[in-house]
Length: 432
Image (cartoon, rainbow, N blue to C red):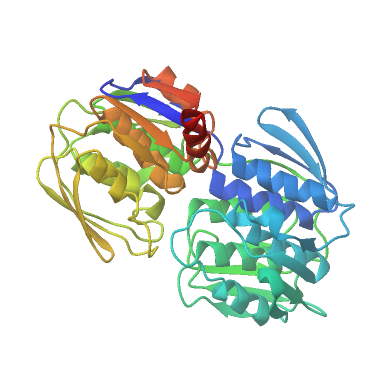
């Protein structure tokens, strides 16, 4: 069992460079299925979700060559299979983007339901609604296999009943080669949706309106290879920004798009941090206890749900009472149990958490990462706490944060990755 061992109480100072956006790359890689040629993609983050997606594409027959650590060339033109089994999809939720890309290319897709973090039920009903509007027939087969068939895809109006990032991107993938005009209404507006649209357009698609709630896609006959660079990761940047504030540090976060960070920046300023914006960087300074404030997660441009656990951790260190409301996922407060083990006062009632802040801080403890962003929150808590914390289930964190140990150590954090015997093996050794 691998764990992070963190000795808290050290201010984070210095510079850190943000990697490519996880939520963009996991849709852009499947999108290469639509290209008739080689795609060269830069700013690829070295995270396990990318490794899992590349493994799926390679198993299907894609030719993949890394030019350097962050740039790869991928050629999917020889792929003939439209089937993706559960053994491959169970590692990441974003595997459902393969459905849209495969029906865009083959008019067929048999893809097992995805894995990834458990944040409550993740229905794909809005995805299915979009596929059916384009003329596809969708059925659920044995072993949780989603089977999609279409004689042809025809552009149509698609109204999403809820703002869904996944459904917006999946319908985009399916629609770019459909005949005629597709209009997605009530579309999500996150930066990674704009990035996917830009990538598709660079391959020859005609996608307009990404970043607004109405996206118009005029189908094209064919798409070609291209060169493209992934945007910086908004959530990784936000995580280091909050970590700087929680440890009362001074950190320059580089390779960011400050516009994408506005909702995070606004709340950090409200909590008492100083945030300076540059062209491609932000600097976060905090030299006192945070001030209590309230957050409510909302679709972009509101406060991102993927930053909620990290910011809640900061509020545990604040003076006064804060309220955190979650409007996106049903099961996003599981991490609060871990913070309580460290001495935090948090009471959850449905989709709201009441946090009684304590500027005296948290205490190191054995804790775990319940999911990707909860794991990031635990890292922040452990670095701000007094004493030593052992953080388990770190594979969740490595799904979305590249070289997190090296990056944090470069800022002065006392963190190392260690391998421990599994509990069962440890017990057997002790019994022997």
